[in-house]
Amino acid sequence: MKKTMTMLALALSAFLPLQAQEVGGTAKERAADRVEVCKQNYHTLFGGEALTGQGTDPEMMDILQKFIFGEVFRSGELTMQQRELITCVTLATLQTLPQLTAHAGAALNVGVSPLELREAMYLTAPFIGFPRMLNAVATVNEVFKQRGISLPLEKAGTVTEADRHKQGAAIQDKLYPGGIASVMAGVPGGLGEDVEYFLTSNFFGDVYTRGALDLKTRELLGYCILTTLEAESQLYSHYQGNLTAGNSPETVTAAVIQTLPYIGFPAAINALKIIKQEETKKPTANLIRLSKIVVDKARLAEYNAFLKEEIEASMRLEPGVLTLYAVSDKKQPERVTILEIYADTAAYQSHLKTPHFQKYKQGTLDMVKDLELVDVNPLIPGLKIK
Image (cartoon, rainbow, N blue to C red):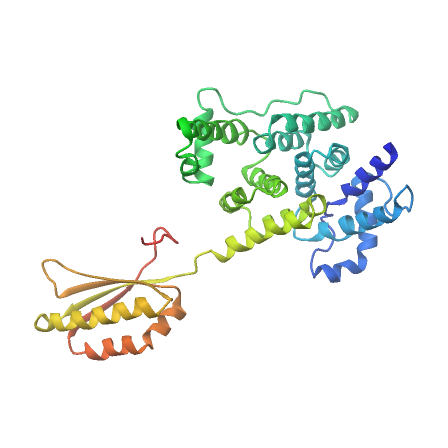
């Protein structure tokens, strides 16, 4: 049994990219050389030989090693160190400690420092709780001892009792403006405020401010932990947090795929669907302008009637017309300003060809004494007008 567990630990430790390996092309195209790539990467990670045909389950070992070593790890452009850190936090979350032992050693082999590996384990605490985090830390510490690494490692904390909340709030406000106040509002006894305070002080203050791992890495690893936990609601907000921290959509996607052999297809696909949904929600480049119009005073009522009909029709019939909001100067009502927001340039061009706009344009042509079109940029892109 012990021998079988050791073989499984080594087999599952294959999810690591060799930076020198080709990552281009489709998965189908890359599969052609997966056997050789598998053998090379396994040796790089563990110094041993893959696909030996030995043990009690050689067929399954063959499937695992070729898939993980030879195929999955080449999806996306992650470094060896990133992939092993992702694998280690995933295994810590799953509490598959024999496999974590193998991967902790592999992480050190490819250049992850002991401090970085320890901090990755500490990072799991706010997500999975202290008991499971301590199991993972104990497992990694055993690997350190076997490597002759002296414990305890050097300290990496940066906050004090006096400033832990302030420092945590600075990070939280940067990544997640508004925090979780709305989620905790209405919790009986007002205890939601306690949870909100704990999140800021402990999660972001005690943990996120520590050294060895930068903010981008912490957010990326956190997303992998949440993917493993299938924490759907948090995956939405933490995806945006990753983008704010500086991770690209492609990097987050590759990180999720990195977890796939350990957590299975359903959980990984669910996380990828959330990424896809968040990407499709991104605002397009709206066309925004101010139309500044001077109308013939004698025909102002007639002009306003044309304008009202045109705006009402545009807002009702054109999805690409997001806003048409007309105002006039109180002291000089003949001076009219219209805030125009279109989904994009194509929506604006389509608007100009509509019958209702043409009716307005031709009907008011001799009423307009002056027209100035001012293209503007939003100071808060994506902000919706209620």
